[in-house]
Image (cartoon, rainbow, N blue to C red; front, side, top):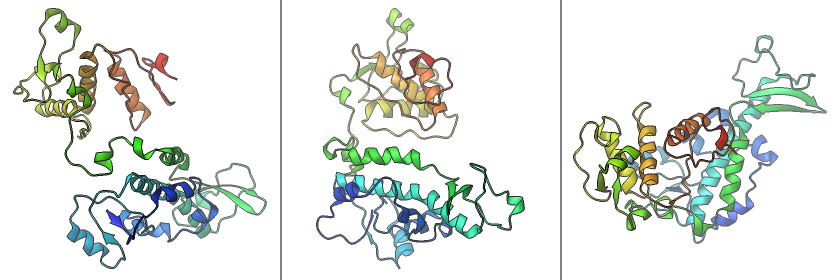
Length: 324
C-alpha cells in the first residue's frame, strides 16, 4: 500500500466525516495539478499523494524505480483499520469523480469560448470555433456573468450515492473485513458448509422424482470431470468454477465473453436454492449494467420465481412483474 509517512493515530474516520461528498468550488476550479496533462493512472495518482492505494502482490523493484523521486513510503501491508480502508476508498473515488468536472472547467478556460444566449443549447459548433483542443464540456447559457457548462466524460451523481453510503458504514459491520482490510489470503469455507456439506448438483424436478441424485461433499474431492456431467456444459473449467463458488466464502470467476460465467453463476444459485428447504437468503445479485442484471434474473426465473428487481433501466418483459 502506498502511504505518506504516518506517525501515530491517523484519524481516518474523522477524515471521512469532515470531507464533504459534494465538492466545494475550490475542488473543481483549482485542482492540485493540470488534470488534462495526466491521462496515465500513475501520473494522475501523484495529484493526491496523501491518499494510500493497495499495491499488494506487485514488484516492489518496479514500483520503487518509478517512485524513487517521490516522498512516498511504500508498504505492502494490511490496512491499519476499517476506518483506514473506508477512508482510502472514499478519497480515491471522490477524487476520481472530480476529475471530469475539473477537466471540463480547464477545457472551457482553454477554449476561450463564450456562452450561448439560448437556454440549454449545446454550443459552440466545433466548425465555427477556432479552438482545436479536445472539448471535455458542453456549454449552455450565460447566467449573469457566469457560464453554465456540463462535464461530458463523467457523471458525478453515480458516485455521490456510493460516497454517501461509505460515510455511513459502521466499522464493526463491514462485510469480509478479514479479506478486504486484513488482507487474509486464507479463504474460509462458506457458513452453510458448517451444517450442510453434501449437495445435489442436479436439482431438476425430473432427477428428484427418479431419485437419481448426484450428491457430493462440496468441501471434499469432486469426481473426475466427464462430458455432460452435472448438466453444466462441456468445459472442465466450468466445473472447477462451480466447485470454487460453492466451497469458498469468497470466489472470483473471470473469463472473456462467452466462456460461461453467467451459466456457472446461475448453476451455483440453482444448487444453493435447491438444496435447502428453508431460505438461506436473501441472495443479492448485483451487476454492472441493467442488461446484465436482466439476463441473469431471466436465467434464475427458470427455477425460482421469488425475485425482486430493484432499480430502473430494465427492458425485460419476463421480469416486469418483479420490478420495484
